[in-house]
Amino acid sequence: MSINASDSLTKLICTKSDCTESSSRLWIPLETQTHNTKKQREGTFATRTRNFNRQRGIRMTNQDDVVNDIKAMLEGAEAPVTDECCIYRVPFDIRKLNEDAYTPKVVSIGPFHHNGHSRLRNMERHKLIYCKAFLDRTKTSLASCIRYIEGEEPKFRRCYSETLQFSKEELVKMIFVDSGFIFELFWSNYYGEWSMSDTFLSKPWLTTNIRLDLLLVENQLPFFVLDGLFKLSFTSRSGSGNQRIPSFIELTFDYFVYYNRSNLNFRNIGIRHFTDLIRTFHLQHPPQRRPPRTDESLIHLHSVTELLEAGVRFKVNTKSNCLLDLKFSGGVLEIPELKVEDWTELLFRNMVALEQCHYPSESFITDYVAVWDFLVNTSRDVDILVRKRVLVNWLGDSDSVADLFTGLWKNITHLNFSSDYFYLCRDLNAFCRDPWHKMKSTLRRDYCSTPWQTAASIAGIILLILSLVETVCSVLQVIQH
Image (cartoon, rainbow, N blue to C red; front, top):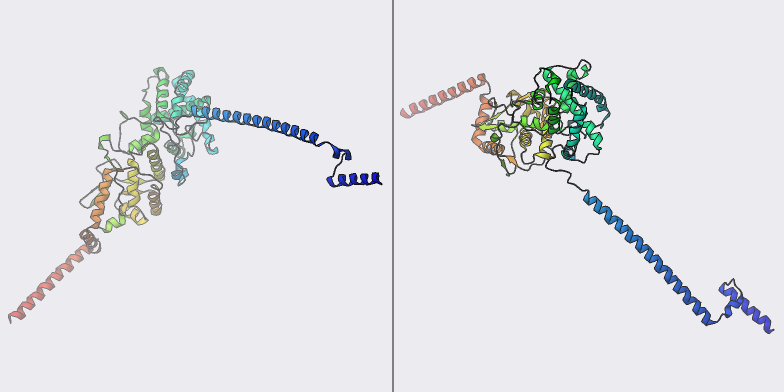
């Protein structure tokens, strides 16, 4: 009986503790169990310590790698824009207003738009043809040209506002082909000697579009590279026979002569690229004529319609060839004639973009655009200036001209302002505040707008005076009687 009870008790204990081992495990001495547990704990602690040290070592290794990577990044960091930079991407806020005005249509020059659009790739073949024609004309050593370009390549890169993602070899090839194309194009235009093997580029519509593409601020090569390579090509006069060899700046002036309304001479003119040349064409010369800048905030100016109602008269300024020469004196605002053509917006947008990036403290073209933005708000303002022969509207639609002027000054940052224009705006606003000027304008508009109306008004005044004299005489007679 005692044996069976013991077996039952053992089974019961094993069942409750879910043991899988023999029931004899229940009778291990307490000292042995404590010793085993202590050894297990010590082993677990040692394992955890090793794992911690291993993970710590990995973290330290990762930190060292990150520190080294950052040091390498900082050592390779260079200022993206230096004093030599002169060719820029148009700021996004300005570019989005009219992307077509900043994007080449037929030919890419320089790295920003190289192979950027499928429509530009067809011109690459013609560029090679023109480049080869120039080499044949000048008998220039190809190796000497490449050596020159390789020597100027680091400085060339610093002329751009962005890091150029081209290898040295790719950049040298691009500069050489684009330069050779420009040389042959300008030479052909100067002498009228268009290549018979490629008459495609002599088509009027294409020559116009190429000339406009060469004006874009994003589509430029630094002028010093072009000028140096051109001089290298004519170290010997044997390449052109007895033909006179013009300088590259002379060829450039001849190619863009249409925009040289100030009739500048190419001598003693320094430019950074073709967009810079177009801006120079529109400035006052000599530079001493350019007005000083003022930090005064831009004063609001009334529109043409409002100025006319206030008594201001408009007149074409024929005494100056410079577009920027606006004058106000004796109630007359004189403005040089401006032809509004299909490419006028493109021209002004790129000059303004260049000033925003490179000439923020000398933004004379931007000042001019700001004045026009105030003067022209509606098609009625355009029509008034067309009648006064201040504007020549070759767009045909007055609303299109108004939209052009109201859009040129959007998203533009002004650092300072031309003192001449500041005083111009101040004097015009003071003139408009005088009620006597507005009264005279109303009388002139309502009673003297035409010769017949003037004659009728004078006759009416005479009759009024005679009637008044007759009335006075009648009253005097009555008083005497």
